[in-house]
Image 1 (cartoon, rainbow, N blue to C red):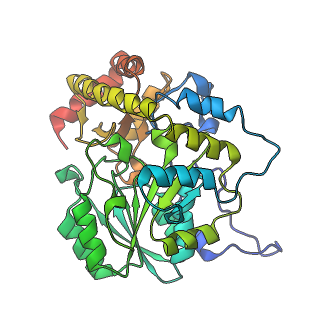
Image 2: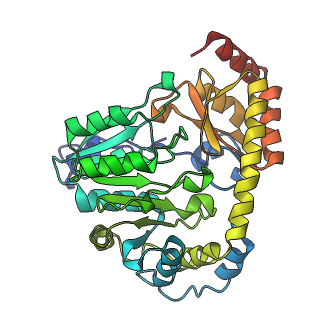
Length: 386
């Protein structure tokens, strides 16, 4: 829901008009709790079990909470997040000057648009995907071209078809989420390397926010290409969503450009301390990912037994074909369980579900079984096919 709708400005109002790009920019709908909506429904956010977010449901390491208790709140944070960048550099095996930290990956997406897209430039987005890529590009004044995956192929990304779209559009910046949100589909590093080599004047922004949740998928940071910028979000795998923390890895000149347009002190002291502590407590993440992989397998099997079609995904989240995603979400929300309606991705017949802890997955299944409308809808959808 848009809490700040653009209203027509009356002739007598003496206020400056916003740029045309602001009025024309698409709104990006996101998962997670909509507090205004929950308030209207009389629901307490703490009572709603949220399957609409793709973060680690096991929460941050206890070491993170200990580190937060030591952060001085009366002192400005390090503008350049040196301790965090050095810890990341050690983990990734790259120099610190190839890393820039941001207030979540979303801020870095906007920094890319400000730094590299000029009015009239072409931006390119592989869809269906996260809405902030197109939104940031439009606000920068660029024209957005897209390639859209086919539902008949379970939304698999087709390298040759994407390459043809790149050849035709010759974009200045191309955005790709890998693994993709909401489909969980991946692109091999070899394909990314080929695109980067052939279209050497395009900056390929590869958003790896969910890479940790996809076993055996190699990062684009291993590709030797100056025109590949990798985004990561520590809010997802390390469960730091409330603090907002992300980083980008790329050529020093690209990273320096992002740092120049990033707002000052955008990464607060608590986020920096949490990031350093999380990186030092890797065993917590490994255990969480192992549990999630087992939980996903069981959850998909149970949903299938209820007549719901879960699409293949490399991650712990996946699309489910339900016929009417908005109605399915609404019915579950009345039972204090939230899933992601995918209409904003252009997929109104689908919802996205992210695996949670076993006891929480059981609550989702119980809510579906308890609501005749939901259970029957799943059976009807399966029989009717896509």
